[in-house]
Image (tube, rainbow, N blue to C red; front, side, top):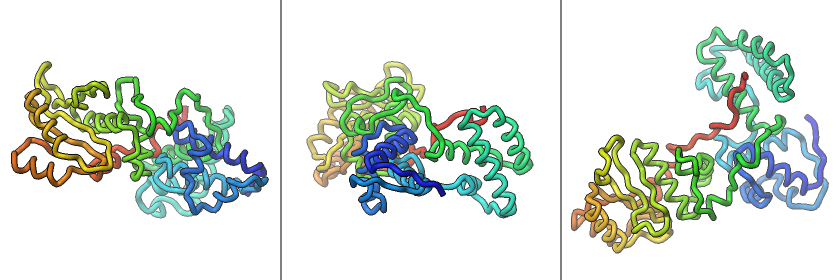
Length: 335
């Protein structure tokens, strides 16, 4: 195992860049340290002014721990290529390969990745050899390619060339009203992955990001979604229609988003009911990072309001359902 010798500040900078780029975030050193576990064995050394000597595998493990904290991977640490393949096969690999066969596949696949990382012209021949080693076993090549894709994306031993414009500031989740501008999504997948790994941060995100998160869930659930402007929206944050509804039809559901720590009070429910009547909607929905208050719940029940609540637990379930760690990091591995 090789070693890297650098001042602690250089390690902090490298870890911020390596973990941030691989998770898709523009990550500051403060962000990096804030997501390194409090009991991590490198923390005290990283915040020192010392010259550090770290094993290359120890460094890679730290990157893996940060990627897990940022939601980009499903497990901490830095898996080997073989371990990634075994996890993706989802069955006993020993029924498919002997140990020496698996080690040979991992060695050839690692060689291919090194060649690809160096833009070596021999990589096509090596991949053909690799394919011949596994192609007669159904599903194995697909699992191997995915394992290689993940390994190339997440292991800091391979370089990553990502334009700054392709990164998003993690701080934007907590401080920015800006939502994705491409029209195809309302909330960034990287933020979904992050909140899946850091569920306690849900109540701290910007209120506009919370509206975007809610809109993203309902769009993926098959609704046509109209997201309000955020400000001066007449208290209606989202309007939902069943897919294919006639133009001009009343909304199926109107949604009020409440990113707050206190429980949603009766006045919010009464105002939402008035909006349901005004817009001739079928129902109203309160989506909150807290829950509905007992008084508000009593009003809904006693007055038969067509209003339901998605509380913090429900929203966290939405996030887990939408979470896609490992997604979208490297495309066209064999090209």
